[in-house]
Image (cartoon, rainbow, N blue to C red; front, side):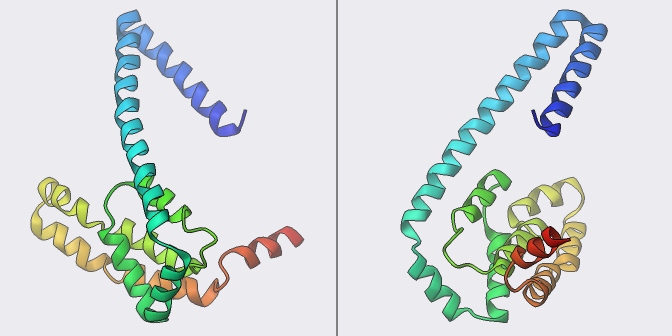
Length: 175
């Protein structure tokens, strides 16, 4: 068992003991019921996400990606990738498998990095929730302040890791 799994099992056992101590078997069963319903909602979303990813893999070929990379090369590609990340719908269980599906299709690391940075910095699907929980002005201000960061991060990644982390891993392995 990996350390993460062991840690999670220990946390579950401790929480179950606390729940049992506070409310007995009823509270433990209620927590398991809620966990089951949460897992089923997530399961449906994950299945739908993988179906969409499979369809995109069929629709988007290596040649199409090469054409896009040729059309949007250099700084333009980082800007487009960052903006696409911000506009991409869904959570990490959708966009990380989506990105993983492009492995081996020749997408440079810095574009994937820009995409993820754009998604995390200014996810437009998060804007209404953010505006509702704070104020619209504060939500817009946060987006304006963080707007340049995915571009800057993409430029840094292209400058220092043009081949991705492959060179970095090999250097670390030789130490």
